Image (tube, rainbow, N blue to C red; front, side):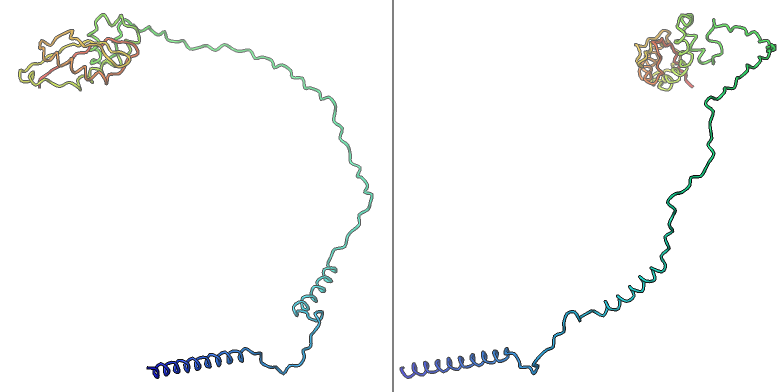
Length: 250
């Protein structure tokens, strides 16, 4: 055992010495490479800074002198003006202080000769007793329902009725639906309905002032007006409306 231990210690020592020697040789080789190499130059001649000039400056300096001399030759000569300049004698215009006004003479008036005016034909006054004149027969048929009451209405109400009563009757007929029971029973006729139409578009409760002799047709006319009144043209004042509703089987 002791011999083996001694051999192992000796081997370790030998390896350590060899590694140390190799490491030392590497360091010596690197130091020799870093040493400066010897040169054969003994001295250097230095030139003064005043003599060092760039070649560009020498070339640029010469043409500047030539340009300056040429410019001096081409400069215009300054002309000296005289110190005193004589003033020109110009005529002076003198305006008058007062300008005379031109007296305007009145123009003599020409005598106007009277011109004979053409005689106007005497227009006969139109009779306004019958406001239903020159009205279509449908409008006239609605206005006849008022009888003598129409003459008591103000002028605005009369004009409204003449212009719009025909449209009110036409709108009502458009909403009219013939009752099915009346068709089966072959009921026909004409009834007259009266109500008041207000400026806000609303109406009073319609009522039958002339019956068609059939209560189904009369009730149907009242219900039709309650739906159609929203499309009636509105008056400026509350106006009594009288229209007839016709039921006719074809």
